[in-house]
Length: 156
Image (cartoon, rainbow, N blue to C red; front, side, top):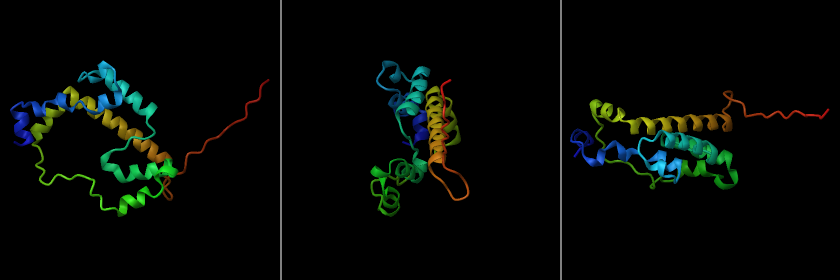
């Protein structure tokens, strides 16, 4: 069965509630985190992502994510970029036969509250990742490293 057929027939495997994955992961163990479509859970997930995670990467920017890890935590990730570039990457999965969904299927899924909230968290994580990447990685002529100025404050 294709994904299009699954969505068209309202099968449980393609129920948008099953997409409620990343929000509860970043939200935590509170009961509210596990209620699909809960706005509080989404806001908690965003807050936790910023407060408790040094960096959260995205699959489509895997190389940059590894480079950021190496720059941020060199004692732990020294050589990770080189290893990633030169390893056989057999641990990465690839779909052998991927049938893209029809536009009407995509539209139907994107109308669900769950998809909208999961996508909002994804966009938030992507924005955070790109912010951190910009601050950590200096590209020739494109960016300057973060500079902190500490001013002396003298009591009166």
